[in-house]
Amino acid sequence: MSENQNENQNDLGDTSADVTVPPETGTAVGSVERFQDPGVPEHKKRLTDTDPRAAKRAERTVTLLFVLSILGTIGSIVAYVMVPPDGTTAGVRLSTLLLGLGLAVSLLGIGIAGIHWAKALMGDHEYVQERHTLATQAEDREAAVNDLNEGLADSGVVGRRGMLKGAFFGSLALFPLAIAVPLIGSVGGDWNISKFKHTMWKRGMRLAIDPSGRPIKATDVTVGSVFHVVPETTEAFRETHEWITEKSKAVVLMVRLNPEDLLTDQSPEGEDWSYEGIVAYSKICTHVGCPVALYEQQTHHLLCPCHQSTFDIADSAKVVFGPANRRLPQLPITVDSEGYLVAQHDFAEPIGPSFWERLK
Image (cartoon, rainbow, N blue to C red; front, side, top):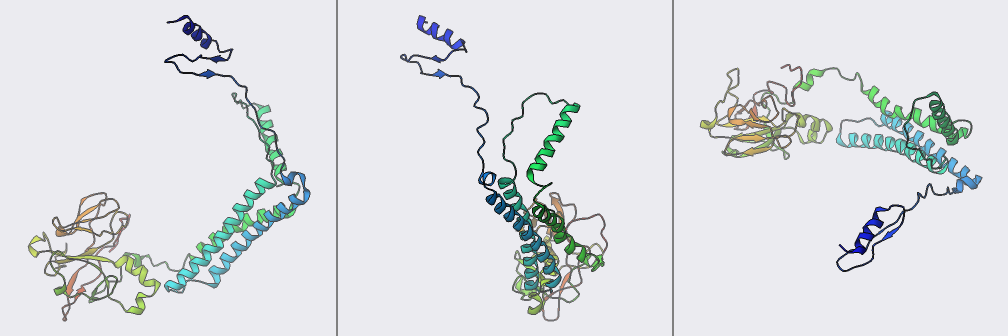
């Protein structure tokens, strides 16, 4: 090692001086420099700090935004009372739109007003907290309380800007009504919870293709084919919002297997629930309610795409894999005098995810 290199290393070990390594063949050039902490930059006053008129304009703007929030809350309550859902899809859509707009205006008014208030009127000084052990001594608690009081006074929440404070507290006080009134107004309308345990399937109701609504004949179903099925209804009923609710519970997946592939074609009560290898099961997964719509023809398995629960439709749709702990409910089917597939009756058990109490 050369003498110059030894001297350079000694210099690098001394952190009290700036060091520059001279360029040499095969060595990199670097420097080590020390600098002092620049500290907090000088505070720059805002327009609202120097111009009282600008501060007054900002205060009026914040007040107006809080008033706008109040109007949004009132508007959502008026929409809930004056434009209730009328049972049609268009009516539900309009009611939901008006409620959503009212809530949006109410929340946006509070949010934007709070941001503008903080940026234009509240203090914007930078404070440095020394990194040392914080002891919960009396003087520390007293200093913290004083800091909070100073910040509260600086924000204008107490002592001044009465109109702004009124708008602020008024908007916060009224906003919960936009959520509470619709919730409370919906309580007690219908306590018949048994209706949630049944679907619209009834004896003799034809099976129809979803979404066309065309009824299905047994001769239309070939071995290995899959049909997404809903109850046959009138076209007028399919345009109502009630149909969307009922359809979501009654939707069925129907498959035709070779009769010899069916391990069982009877219900636990001994009834014949299939027709010449045609079986129909609820499309709603018994885990969390996702649509079970992936059919594997070779294994006769139905797969839920959400959490991979797998059901064997050749064996009463029992669970063969996944988190579901209950088989898919089967829709008992037969044919009518014209050869159309019809339901024998509703599902024998509630469809959808399992819950703590199940009544037939």
